[in-house]
Image (cartoon, rainbow, N blue to C red; front, side):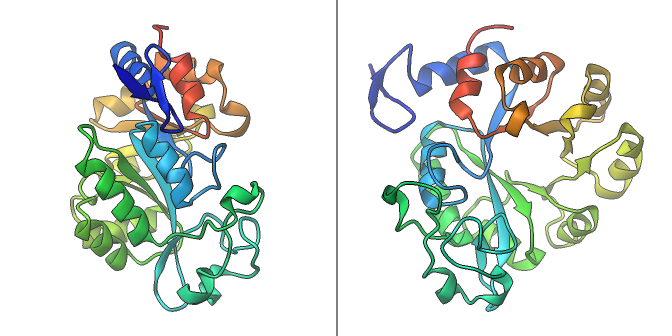
Amino acid sequence: MTQSNAQGQPGHSPDSIAYYRKQLQSHHHLRVSAHRGSSDLAPENTLATYRRALAMQVDYIEIDVRTTNDGKLVILHDGTVNRTTNGTGPVRNLALADVKKLSAGKGFSGTFAHELIPTLEEVCQLLADWNANHPVATNLYVDCKDVAPEPLVATLTHYGLLTNAVFYGSDTYLANLRKVAPLAKLMPALQKADYIDNKIRTLHPYAFDVNYSALNESLIQRIHQQGIRVFSDLLDTLDQPVHYKRAARMGVDVIQTDHVMSVYRTLSTPN
């Protein structure tokens, strides 16, 4: 049977997304989040990169949500548009119409010159359409950079994506988000084990985003005993097979990566 590869082109098992996903799920508990999409294939936080991440059947796509000066929610990691677009200045100072005039393809070939900063609604529509046509859903990992809880919750609810989304942000922000959406899956950062009990008591988290350098089996077991999941970023120098294997052995639930296919290939066999 013909399968699709990471670029959505015909391929054949055992070198296909379907093959790797099946192998990963057969051998490991660990799941995968695409950091800002699939940024090694297309510009970060764009519809182009999210399409590629979805084609790789990731469990989560991470989005960074910010607000324009006319109250529209857009997807952008930095506070300014300088690094990833041909514009300058804080996105907070720009109206959506001005944001939409910018190319978000900076640093990539001309293929992406017309790629734009997407709105949250555009990303939600893309994901909702994907999930409606595929048996296994991909969910949102929402990094709440600069966004009020109310419009964020309203948008995700409209597209049927709120229930399974996970929300990362400061403890104060997550506490306010909980007031708007009591059942939201909160994921506070965890830098040290000493903070676990207080964060559980105040936030009742779904997961902890644990600093990889702090991870060990006993910490993960302690978190799991509370019914809480463990997410961890394996980025930059940590985005390597040796760390994927270590995370899987320790029992990490979700790793975040810029190199999804490298994770798939590494973990498609037992440890």
